[in-house]
Image 1 (cartoon, helix red, strand yellow):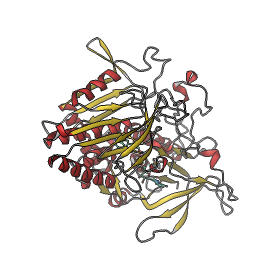
Image 2 (cartoon, helix red, strand yellow):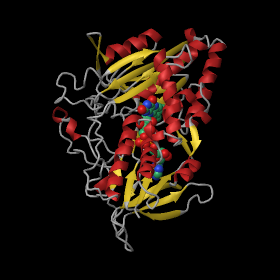
Image 3 (cartoon, rainbow, N blue to C red):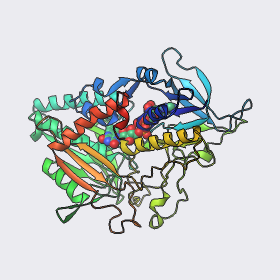
Image 4 (cartoon, rainbow, N blue to C red):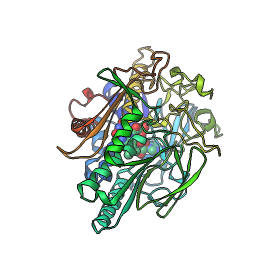
Length: 485
Ligand SMILES: Cc1cc2nc3c(=O)[nH]c(=O)nc-3n(C[C@H](O)[C@H](O)[C@H](O)COP(=O)(O)OP(=O)(O)OC[C@H]3O[C@@H](n4cnc5c(N)ncnc54)[C@H](O)[C@@H]3O)c2cc1C
């Protein structure tokens, strides 16, 4: 009997758990440790935050799904990994702290044969004073509850406009080193769409506030598209979408402090500015969730396995070589943690070897440059690959590890620009590969036939269908395994 413990039931961990359960006989145990009782389809949170979808549509309880699948569900936070065991046993273990109402605060040491760290990001609002909905002055759409609060604030802002008041609405990144610009891009267009629907567009100044050097970078170094024999850049394509909607962009901006109604920020040229706002949704930067590692004697060995940002080191090149020397091959393939042959980190939990966009700093040394995005599709693909690797190992197949490099896989991102069966639209962006490979594609780093951007109503229908498909899959309903990640 082999026991696999998976930390985190987000896109990557939940995908890994379902596939592993499918691939292994019931004599092998699959354990999921995750703090929340509900699964959240995070990409649809932007609709909750725009007030166009109820929170209940993006959440469902995990316990019945795991009970039906035969997955052991531990509602807890993973706190400490003991990869070499402890004084009682050399078998790897993880210390967890329960978050369920019945056992809140209790701790337990769980032994494992295989461990997957899929803990996603810590939403690091604390990196910018005054950022975030809890202790700050801005809203967020990163969790379903944040999104509900964002929708309330958006409705209040729209109500003020209906009463004749002008409003400044800012959407974007709340720190120079943020990632997930795509989510801010979606949300700003949804806000614009809702304001227009409410008939008060003339009273709203809508600003996209981003750490990207130029629009269309998206943390992937931008894209080039070829359509009908014509070449265009992601920058021109994205700029035209902003211009069509009358959304002004502030680019190359790092928020340094937020006060009630005011963003203090620095630009890439080192100049300092302020931007007033009545409504602001600013994303936080991400770090690892703060899991540490101990050796069998209880000494802290976190530095061996975690990067300074708390994300876990895997089979990538972390040598810190200069930008000019970066290669697609620096990116991890198997997600196995070096020195530990039974531990993997997937999704946002793994430490990227370096940014994808060229890193930029202001003359004051402030990093104002997107961190690499790790969207849902790669997160799911990695989770499945690691599940297949573990299944092979448990079955003694002696096969090489399954690979899922972001420098080899494509990704599709359908970014909503407003909902509505006939008035909705979405920007569908596909790219291959996610991390540019200039050895394989010397001109642009990507396959021009597979890298595309289209916007229109069909994109909205696709985005709405994906919402239902992925929730269906996550509920492990019949035939879920044929729905791709
Ligand atoms: C607003 C928003 C919109 C987005 N839109 C899109 C989109 O349109 N398309 C797209 O592809 N991607 C989108 N993304 C990105 C997508 O959500 C992520 O790529 C994906 O969720 C990453 O999966 P993950 O498993 O790494 O992390 P998560 O999905 O965040 O899952 C991490 C899990 O770990 C749990 N956890 C945290 N700490 C611990 C701990 N100590 N122990 C155990 N468990 C722990 C968490 O509770 C969670 O269940 C969006 C992200 C945001 C924030």
